[in-house]
Image (tube, rainbow, N blue to C red; front, top):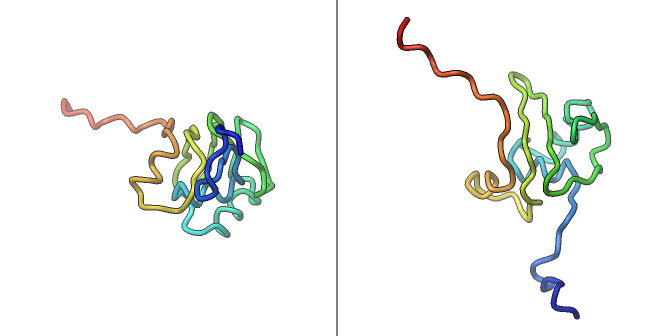
Length: 107
């Protein structure tokens, strides 16, 4: 076994299905709901609309996700290894979504 491979307990993951990544990153409550988001045309990878939940994503890809009340733009930092707590899931992406402007105190 070469030194650049990971151990059997920690698999080397470079690409991951988009539905699985959305579930690991806690964008969707279940993997089936994540797949429905993708199949429904609500997800874009690098500005290209996709409709296949098995489409592979990798670090550096930018996802645009149209949710019920907002649109999220996320840059993938890493594939997920499991669906962990929010603090762990938050490390999988950078949120590039436009943040609302703070209220003006002068008014």
